[in-house]
Image (cartoon, rainbow, N blue to C red; front, side):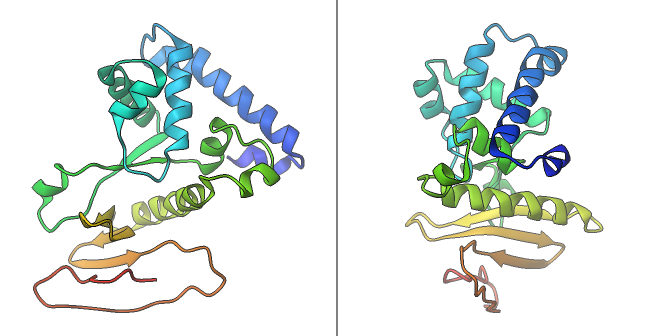
Length: 206
C-alpha cells in the first residue's frame, strides 16, 4: 500500500494496518454484504492469510475457524470481490480441466497477509514457518499486475502433478507460455525447454 512507504517504523506499519483492517470490517464490508459476525469474518481472514501461497482447503479453514464450509466459501468470495484475496487456478491443457482442480490461495497484498498472520516485525517474520509462502505471495502480486498489463491480458496459473512436482506460476499469453519457479536466491536462472505435443515443463524450471 502506498501510504506505508512514508512510514519508517514497524509500530507505525502495524498501526496503519490495524486501522485499515478495522475500516474494512466496520465500514467497507457493510457496504458489500451483511455479515452476522465480524469476529468470525476476521478469523477466516487470518486463517486464509496463514495459507497464502498454498492449495486452498475451505473445509480446513472452516474447521479451524469453527464456522461452516459454505460460510467460509461466502467470506472468501467477498474478499475476492473486494480485491483483497484471489484464487489462482491450476494450469491444464483443457480449460474445462482447470475448473476441476483445487486453486491456490493468495492475498493480493503480501503486507496484509503478513499482518493478518500476526507477524508485526522483521525479526519474527524472517523466522516464520510461512516466510517462503509470503515471498511467493510477493511474486504473485507483481506477476498479477504484469499479466494484466499485457494486451490482451494474460492468464496466470500454477502447475502441479499428483506426486507434488510443481511450477509455482505459469503465464499464458495466446499460444505462448512462461513458467516461473520461485526461489529465494541471488542467482536466478533461466532455461527454455520445449517438447512438441506435451506440456513443456517436465522438471522444475528455475
